[in-house]
Amino acid sequence: MSSDLPKIAVAEALAEKIVALAASRLPDVTTRKCEDLLIDVVGLCVTARNQDYARSALLGCDDDGPCTAIGHRRTLTAAGAAFVNGTAAHGEDFDDTFEGGPVHAGAVIVPAVLAACERHNPDGRMALIGIAVGTEVLCRLSLVVPKAVHKAGFHPTAIFGAMGAAAGVGAALGFDAKQIVDALGIAGSMAGGIIEYLAEGAWTKRLHAGWAAQSGIRAALLARSGFVGPRTVFEGTHGLFNGFAHTTQGDYDALLGDFGTRWVTDTLAFKPYPCGTMAQPYIDCARRLGARGVNPEEVSEIVCEVAEGTVHRLWEPLAAKQRPPNGYAAKFAVPYLLATGFVRGGVGLGAFTENAIGDPRVLALAAKVKFVIDPDNPYPTNYTGHLRATMKDGTVIEERQPYLRGGAQEPLSRQDVIDKFALNAQHGGWTKAQSDAALKLMAGLYEGRIDLSPLRN
Image (tube, rainbow, N blue to C red; front, side):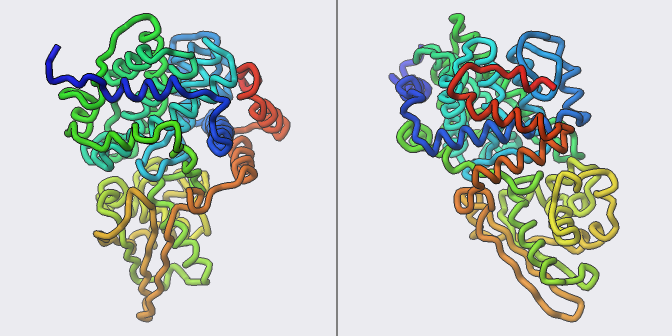
């Protein structure tokens, strides 16, 4: 062992804080957010259940077992169920976002903890603490070296998701501190997820959440069985941050400082539109422009001020973002999304069909959308939107959206979350009776025994 290694590693300090937590001491607002996450994730799994990528994920699993793949009759192992549910929940890019990251916690942590508890510890109170811990770890890890993981070509949800899932499953299964440290150390070797899906709208981003979820379960079960992982998994010379952010230096206090006393989980945002998070304020601007009665054909040019850190994912190459090759690529193309919001008055699940992405009015307007980098844009601390439309008669109209709707500054109510669930369930083919039964089940899930079998249809 090297004499340069720390006496107490970051993972060890984190594990001690995790084992000190109890579900009974969670703040009410945090408990409520975990309830909202459960409702949202189940609805997202249902809305995706008949999609081709969800069917492929299910068919690609050869590990049948006792755990629930939400919206399907077939049952799988805990890891298999976590993979399928996580892939489905993230598949339409309609899942929650932590604005400081940006990372998507619910699609990773809820499937991982539910599957682990369904198989190994069906105590709803422990599922609650597991989801709270896993979400908190995932979100806080994204603050240690902001933007660096994305810049290096990796998907932060995939990288930090494996770690958060390992921590959440460990908490839900009642691990001691040493087992949590080993689980985190093992998960570091399972983390992965490149963002090359952006090139042609491939499906791999969708599986990142599912892969992280199942990795967290596998890492946790290995740790429970005595498998040893590196305790310096985070800050080590060859650790997680060196591998995926190209630095071992970071703000580890953002992870550890007030962990368990202040919950960043409370600020999670629920999306109003099923597409890339940073695009959403721009859609709001476009909708307001359309609501003014502006004719898209009379627009000469639209210029948007944007954050430099979002350009490589949402704005370039510009021609491909103006005319995306398929529906999934369209979810990360602000010119198309902005034009859709303007022309159609909104962006819903139907905006990504083959017919929708070929709409000539939308594409004609998207071709007029350009961007300039705003060096003062607050991303990733805050997500803002802007557009400046120049009309053919020379008139200039400007719109700004100062924050992400559904986030900390304008959160969704519980009824909003339920309404979103109902729409997603309907889109996935569930009847109102099925939706009502699922809501009733989820209302008491954290207070009793985990039984997800009613969701297998």
